[in-house]
Length: 227
Ligand code: C5P
Image (cartoon, rainbow, N blue to C red; front, side, top):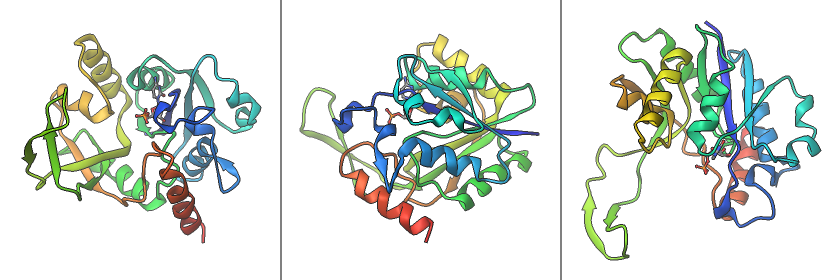
């Protein structure tokens, strides 16, 4: 089957407090989105790349990203809506490799390990993940006083890419959204639909750029990757 990368890139990135959506900030001379697109285009097992862009996004054209061998769709209200719009471009038997625009530091070898799950009949697909390293506290949603400490053992950060047969993922996302579930990644929709999802222990350098402090760190990881 063909592997098609779907990049949700229609967020505004309000936590970054920048003058533009975070995917258009520049790291080592290239926008974050261009780094991410190039990383996926360069992987030998990825056949096609679809990018979901916000309808009013003027930066995409001004950065000449349309010249790249990619397909572009409109993003939606939430991340899951943007992913779904991307998945609609895939064929019946394609596998979708969904990857956040905000994760430019993803490593080739981790993508390869994830795609290898295609041959694993025990799971429907999988995601890159990294074990939680800090002690985790639960706080009541309204306050800042600790209610209790979560058991860190067995807790993982869900990263992207997340990799599933397009047909199953599309149905799971549609179903999850219809049920009003809070779907913050593809795996959560697949879990809700009752599928088994594998974790691939991946490099923690694959950060999601969220806060200003992440920018120099990502520049450092990108330099390391290409050195
Ligand atoms: O906001 P967050 O960092 O969780 O977003 C993860 C990814 O999803 C980002 O690459 C962002 O551009 C994308 N996104 C999207 N459509 C939305 C919201 C977020 O494509 N409506």
